Image 1 (cartoon, rainbow, N blue to C red):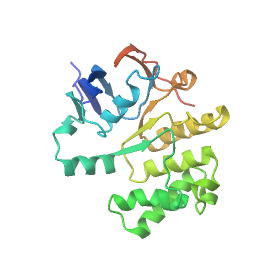
Image 2 (image 1 turned 120 degrees about the vertical axis):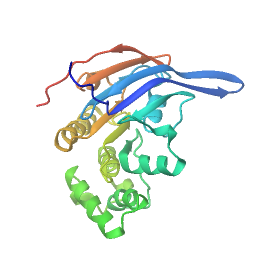
Image 3 (image 1 turned 90 degrees about the vertical axis):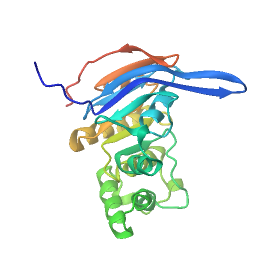
Image 4 (image 1 turned 180 degrees about the vertical axis):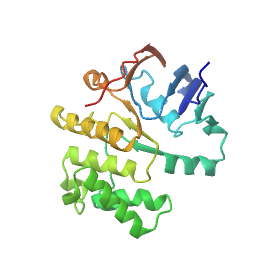
Length: 237
């Protein structure tokens, strides 16, 4: 019998309920799944299916009503608030549909700030920011503020910011949703390249079925549950 290995991420029977206007909303209904290191896993489904809620629970930004989320066998929601905050800061990177860059800061400062919040000194944070902006093809734009960047450039800065603390997992919520088709393809191509070159795991929420089909796995969600699973492992070229 082969030795059983511990999954990188294991979601066990997760429910998430909200009370809105006196009415209970079941955003997640007993979701269970595993994510292995080095995967790019996509979640698809209509608005309200539970994709973003699940992403936030996986990233420990939102706590499930019941169920567990384990990283390398450790239940993240059993951590103290201090340890949980450190976990989010150092092990998980976030990319959102809107880049959420601070408009008064340059691209370099937006990326470096995330490192400084995690405890990095300013000099090292700036060095890391410059290295990552070069990696995402924006070395010549590091002194520009968000308003001086295109939508695709802003999203590239957002990806660099998500990577600055070298997280093992990057969560992306509709990272190409506000972009035109060509720019969206460029951003997804960057995600694939980072996955290959740096070995980071990506979990991506998207409405774009064509992009989802090119991920390692695509999971379809409906009414707070996973309704379809595909395991077509792609050979990235």
